[in-house]
Length: 321
Image (cartoon, rainbow, N blue to C red; front, side, top):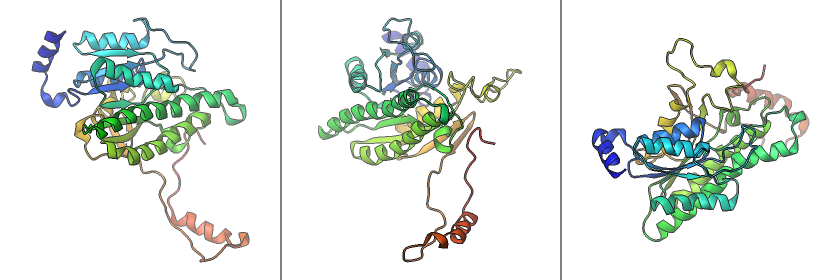
């Protein structure tokens, strides 16, 4: 293995290995975007902890530590190309599981440099048909499943900083256009992904003192969660041309945000689709009115209409109209 890595290092220009030497954890890395991210980090020189529970699209199913799990298969792909990988089947929305995930990186590779939060699943329903259990399950894995790995990773980085070993650490979270703009039939998912965007801003502000930069991506790509819901939009081109919805298109941005090369970029949300990267500009104060004292309800009709005329209209909700 050492000879394979040495040969690969000699053959690959340094600029093509922006994550060389870094230890990266990718959650939900058994399929789709997470798998693409894990493989891209490995090609960029990172040692990768591949985390995946191996559940179905709706989160059903249990854990299995065999090599035949999705996480085991991705780790085997990384090793086959001369890289280093460890497998985690921990539940990232469980505090003990998230703690074990961080320990896996430390026990196998002696450090942790980058955390990519990507795990998630869908249980789509219109709000009037959405069961409480389906709300709780989706919010748990997407939102709590971001919070807990960040908490335990930041605890490690805080300890390193206190010991005088401040890391150039990175966290890349996964939001969604559904969370930023809304999506009909995905109220639970949209709420969770909106929470991820806000959590990213808070974590960036709090973790900076430990040398940690925190950003988020809102990917548009073909995965198990999108290929049926948005089948026409997500279909691969029949002519074999550039596939704008291939999950691999998102990974270069994630690798960059997870590397040393993005020094100084933190607290930002980027949308990625095909070859297009968009810096998302979230809630901002637009036009305002100020009476200087309390308004009466009957006074507000005309001033509020004026505010709406002076301000840009909202982006449309996905699936509306």
